[in-house]
Image 1 (cartoon, rainbow, N blue to C red):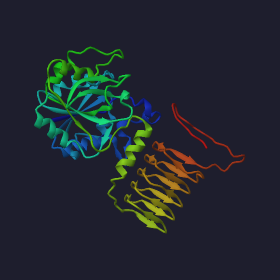
Image 2 (tube, rainbow, N blue to C red; image 1 turned 60 degrees about the vertical axis):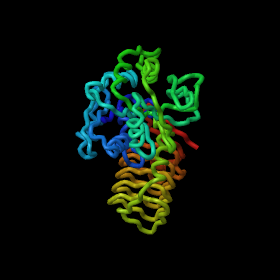
Image 3 (tube, rainbow, N blue to C red; image 1 turned 135 degrees about the vertical axis):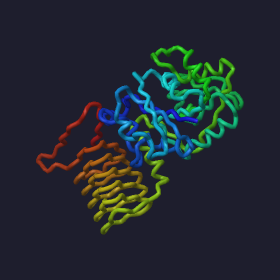
Image 4 (cartoon, helix red, strand yellow; image 1 turned 135 degrees about the horizontal axis):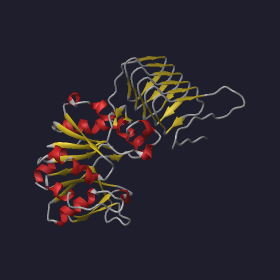
Length: 353
């Protein structure tokens, strides 16, 4: 079995972060989003993975290279334009060949890995196996119509969903999926929809089975979803204390990277500090991930993600529920009269209390 993982698209809902970074490289608990799906593939015994990237993208390959560090052989497959998930499968046919494969959207995070779904697919002998999750807003997703223990239909982002299940970004296929993606037409939005491919399989008598995720699953398309995924991952944090702690109160599960210093501060876990982080006279609250080289001095931070080399210095109001990009600065000004001085990129969002 091979793995096919998406890492393309433009991440428009995560701008301005994605103006300079592929969204699949945004960190969750200080690990890139995409690394979780690659790790799950390797843990499931898969040795070959194809990653779908934007045409001309070098960032993903620069991060993961050949995949040997992960125990994988990675093939990079460029997609000329975002023409739909079924189009992704279509262009991956030369890589997949006649093998069974798992198709995994690289911006999906779940607990427990993917081995159990592979086992269920292989044991039931179906042509297509969908992984479902109950959601409060199924109209945002592909939605299955279920009768008894069988899927009898699939609809993409319906206005009137026929169930409360979403088809998550985890699909398992045999080679019959290529017949489907080569015989459907683009939707009204000009894309080859994966839900239409699933419906084609059903209409042509193929066996489509499903599993339900019993733990948590997040589609991390929005900043709020990223922060929630960060919270869920940190709730299972295995702490390591490799830095130094001086005159500080550190409680709960807190991981501190090499070269990091916590001085005269309070940290309440779960929280993770990368390498060479300075936390001085500061408060770090639960569910906070701070990447390498950051400085938090005289400030308070909670339920947030900070990327590399960001500085938060002498800010008098607690910062929370925030996603802050790399090499950013949030500092307190000393000039009178008091005012906010902002240098803000396109499509940013600032909330001032």
